[in-house]
Amino acid sequence: MIAFDKNIMLNPENQIICDNCLNVLPKLTEGSINLIFADPPFNIGFKYDKYNDNRNSEQYIEWTREWLKACYRILKPEGSFYIAIGDDFAANIKVIADDIGLVMRNWIIWHYTFGQQTKDKFARSHTHIFYFVKDKKQFTFNADAVRILSDRQTIYNDKRANPEGKMPDDVWDAYPRLCGTFEERENFPCQMPESLLARIIRVSSNEGDWVLDPFSGSGTTSVVAHKLNRIYTGIEISKNYAERAIKRIKESEGLPVEGEGQPKWPEHAEKELKWLSHENKVPDATLR
Image 1 (tube, helix red, strand yellow):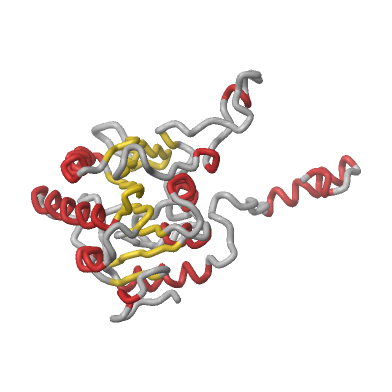
Image 2 (cartoon, helix red, strand yellow):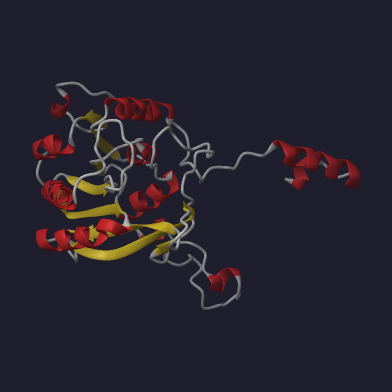
């Protein structure tokens, strides 16, 4: 069932829960979640409909400590915890995570080309993604699920290359920032691409595992978890965003992860293909 109501805490699996995460997290069973992905408000003045993204630094840092501790409590001993954050408070996230006992495995940089343009400093075109675990020796990491082709394979034809590909680096530049013109983009101010979440969910969880997002927003984490056969729970303070996330999950049934399916054949390319077929007397199918 995909819904939210006053009795939702009786069965929080595969639900979008409309409430403040600080009200919900303490009610979840301790040590029950395999993977948490959190993309909290960055405190940089985004215009959300139910949240003030312009707190003073002390308030924001204390609030961050509260939800981090609440997430730590519900994370399984072998669980993983990813946090996306901007420059302004990335260092604070790391300090708090150290204080509560999380172990950092990677400090990932998600680099995108459509950064915010500036006039008097270098344009910001990245987001930090911390990868933490509870236990530095016991955790899920499905390396083969996220391998990519290496330069040794694609450029140098090096026989020493691993035929299965290499592990991605800790700078992720294959995922564009979702601009307003992108088909994947929902009407939400700061949406993550599905393919980026798919990498995290595939590598740090298995089918049937429980994935939680305490700041659900447009619902991307839950949508991708659902597509990849994981249990999901999203928590979202805005009823408007929560309702739209529920609708998005329903409509995603049976669909591939956005950015990974067969790309749509643009109309102009179809016309060019027919012209080439006619000029060269070659069937269309052989040119596709």
